[in-house]
Each structure stands twice: as C-alpha cells, then as structure tokens.
Length: 406
Ligand code: C2E
Ligand code: CA
Ligand code: CA
Image (cartoon, rainbow, N blue to C red; front, side):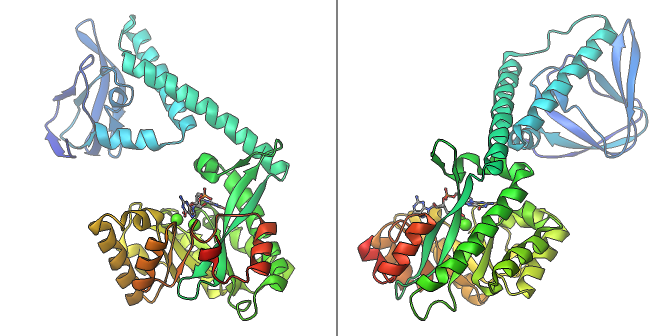
C-alpha cells in the first residue's frame, strides 16, 4: 500500500501528463502549479493552483486517465494523496454527494475535450459501472428521504423500549429507547435500515426531538407502574446523534420537553458515540451543559469505531456501554475477552458504570456477572417492545427473574 509522501520539485518540471494512468493525487504545500492541455506542440493553460489546492484527483475518483497535464511554475512542495486515502472517503460519502461529484467530473472532462477539439475515450467500464451504481444509490437515498419526511409528518416514528437490568439482582433499572418507523401499512422498520440516511439528513433533528418528547411523556406515565424502590433511579436511555448535539437549539428543546411534563433530568440518559467528538466544540459544550443540568451520559459502541482513549477523558460520562460484538466474541475468542476485561478495568479507573449490550445466553450473563459488570440488556432478558408491553412487563413481572421468564 502506498503512503503519503512529501515531494519537492524545481521550477518548470512536469508532474503528470494527460493520458497517463493515475495512482496518486497531490496537495500543494507551497509553490505554484500550472494545469494545462498540450495542443499542437504548445499548451493551453487551464488554471494556476497554489497552496492548499489539490490536483490529480479526477483520475483516481473515476478510474480514468489523466485529463490534463500539470507542471510547476515555481519550486513546489507537494504531499501525495494515495488512491486508497481518497477512495475511502468518496465511498463513505452520502450517495447524493457521490453522484454530484461524478457529474461534475464528467462535465469537467467534457469541457477539456472540447478545448482540445476531440473527445477522449477515457471512460473505463469500471467508471461506467461505478457511475451507474452511484446513480442508483442516489435515487434510493432521495426516495428514502422523501418517505422519511412524509413519515415524520404522519407521526410514524416512535420509541420501542428494551429493559436494562441490574445483573446481580436481575431487576429492571431502566430501559433504552430504540427508534422504530411504523409506516402507514403497519410495517415496523428497524433503524438498521434507515438510521444512516436519517443521520446524514437534517431530518434527524426533528425525528430525534419527536423521540425525546415521546420518551419523557412515556416515562412520566410509567411512574405508577414501577416496582417500589426503583422509581427514584429508573432511567430511560435515549440515543442522540452527534448532529443533534451540534444543533444550537437542542438543549432548549430538550429542557422544554422535560419541563412540560415535570420530569427530573436524572431520569434521562443520553447515549452518545465517539463520533460526537468530530462535531465540533458546540457539541461537546452542549454535552457538558447537559451533565451540569443533571442528565446522565453514556458512551455507546465504545471501541467499535475510530476510538481514542482521549475521548474518554474529554467527555463528561457516567456509563460506558460494552458493545454487543464483544459480548458475542468473548465466549470463543480470548482476545475479545481480554478487551472486555480491559474495558471493565478502564471503567473502574474512570469511575464509570458498565452496561453490557446484546446478552443472549445465560453463559454470557454468567461471565459478565463474574467479571462484575453492573448492568446489561439483551434478548435473554427482553427484546425491544412497545410502550404498552413495557408497562405490562413492569406491572406484572415485577422485574424479578426476567431472564428465567423470557
Ligand atoms: P444501539 O444503540 O447499539 O442499539 C442496540 C441495538 O441492538 C438495537 O438495535 C437493539 O434492538 C439490538 N439488540 C439489543 N439486544 C440484542 C440482542 O440480545 N441481540 C441482538 N442481536 N441485538 C440486540 P436497533 O433497535 O435496530 O438499533 C440499531 C441502532 O440504531 C442503535 O444501535 C442505535 O445506534 C441506532 N438508534 C436506535 N434508536 C435511535 C434513535 O432514537 N436515535 C438515533 N440517533 N439512533 C438510534
Ligand atoms: Ca444505544
Ligand atoms: Ca451499542
């Protein structure tokens, strides 16, 4: 695999030529570069680029040959960008953005061909296939966004609840609100199908707010059904995306929703992922503010993304959730078990509570109990359920022996 390199060029050196196959792009750290089209033994200048600008990226994105040549106008220092570095980002972008990018690239290539007075047969079948795929993805995405927007208007989004139990006593101590989409035909869709699209669109702000409002209203109704002794600590955990925290109105809307029903903030736990750290200073400031106002904060999916231990120090946390993937793997994989043990140690050093996710078997439960994990959730206890079912579970089973009853 190629890695980024620094390359120094003298004045008037050719860096890449039209028609060549490209395997890297360049970021200009200093100096000036001329992009030009060779024509009739001379050159047609297209653009002069300077510090911070990129060139050579087109051939990498659409797997085509270089559409123009580039040479230095002064001494130049460049940083290479590998195909892998570039394509990773392109592929993880919103499909509509990918389509826009390809359309712009094609338009640029057409313009260059017009200047030369001929058409380059530069498009490869790889490019054509990738373009067609991006068109399909973009169409699907726009369709899905329109459906979600209509779903929001028709009040089709609601929370389901999964009990969270104290592993030692097996009492229900709280629940996690999990978003569901019940479309007009009655079909219930899990967020795995639409959460990525929702989080990439501004709709997440309104859908997130609807879920928060429904959660606090449900929690108030739940009070009368809670087993004696737990109502003071019972919490509902709500998944909040980084974009919501980065929204200047989030805190006001949350406080308003809570204030309207007269619920104390300690009953609401906000589940965030490490991605919040990439949302900028406002998101972190909002998180800090939430903690000051008494909300509980849990970090979700820790260790599954681009985790950094620094995040743990920077975030005002109460709980750390052990991801389902570790719980599944720890039974057969020594390394996964070591990671779980390390998380437990880390949590105790940082004074955080642990919640294990996705407990499906009594063997997993026994391991986690022996390791001293305080709380857990999973199909062994209960699947996510409607609010009405949660009321029934809390009223009739009195939370005791859920694992046996499930
Ligand atoms: P998550 O926060 O990690 O939620 C846990 C997921 O694991 C849920 O999937 C839950 O139904 C599932 N699960 C729980 N116990 C078990 C088990 O024992 N076995 C297995 N196989 N799965 C189990 P779900 O409800 O499909 O949610 C998927 C993800 O969507 C959530 O992952 C969360 O990241 C996101 N999400 C859910 N609700 C919201 C929401 O209101 N807002 C935002 N921003 N994201 C949400
Ligand atoms: Ca969660
Ligand atoms: Ca999780």
